[in-house]
Length: 119
Length: 119
Length: 119
Ligand code: NI
Ligand code: NI
Ligand code: NI
Image (cartoon, rainbow over all chains, first blue to last red; front, side, top):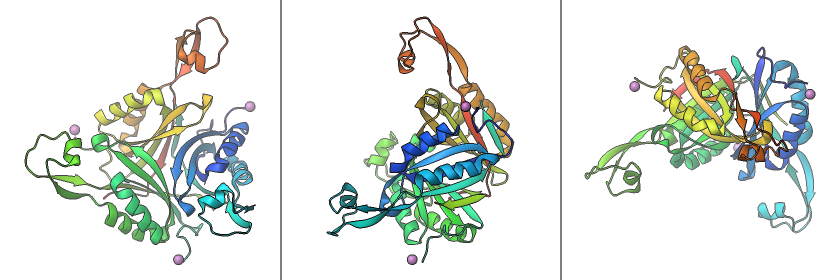
């Protein structure tokens, strides 16, 4: 199958900001599904942690599929962590019992594209 | 107060490119005002200096407030510098008297968003 | 001549993703033509190689000129490489004869801008 950004009609730029932990699996899932992605190192947001910004060009008709892939790989979920884990240390936590933290999550912007070109 | 990107109606993506020197204070000012920001390391422009690119998702009704915060923290302003200062050295200046340089400044793009999602 | 992002009417944000090898020459060609550019380090796409993402603000009437400059400096082209060259090594090729590879290429998004400001 050809790439999903081969259409110049109804092109969209999708900007997805995801946690670093989810970036590699998201990238390979998108590539398996024939989306072309560009990734950039970014930071900011809750806990000031590192994150990854993806630029994904796609035709509008693939947006639902794209959202589903992002959701499957990056959805915010709770994880129970030990107070001795590196995540707990990063959070400078003084809890002494196992606790739940939220991991993952994605912020996604879909933007209309006036012109899309591959040179 | 909840974050200013909580609305899925009238969402805007604001891309602001600012000088590195102003990036930290801008980021904390935006967070104090409940804007959610993502920052990326960038470069280019006058003097080839390093700069920082911010992606800020917001509802349209907060755009004026956002612009004001960017303006307060990043506005281009003149500063009198000594010819012995590091800035003068960076400019490879051969002036021998105190001189005025422009510092700060921001380039801001406001873009309409077709879909905005938090997963 | 003044910069080509001086107009607040019909502003466009052009996002161009190009190969690292073409990034420096593209940046200087754009600056010679009075385009203002911001560049960011990115990655992804075919061969997972490093690439460079440019943000270029311009008035719509300069889009044709801009596309021509990107095309001249980044167009995808074939190059014959020796099987002993670093590029061949990177491709983990087991060919033993000179072969053709595609280099260069650019992916370009043109996006309408609701507001453009220089502070
Ligand atoms: Ni296929
Ligand atoms: Ni609050
Ligand atoms: Ni000129």
